[in-house]
Amino acid sequence: MIRNALTAVGIVELLFPEALVGAAERIALDNPDECELRSWVVPGARAEGLAILFVM
Image 1: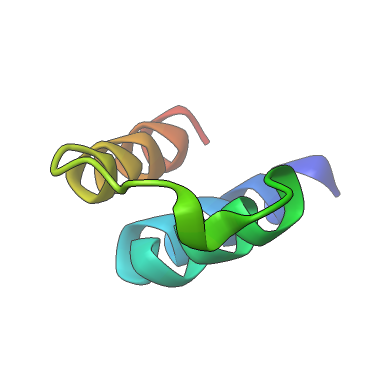
Image 2: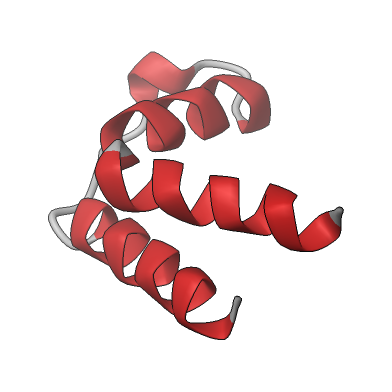
């Protein structure tokens, strides 16, 4: 069960990192419009998704 959930998260993070980062910003920050997205965040999210899939 957890393996399927983590696989789904890894696929979403690999294919749609901008949407996942945007959702995380809305949840984690009081005012997400004031934060600055660094240039390494989206490639880092893709690498994290790939790592999750590799482990699964």
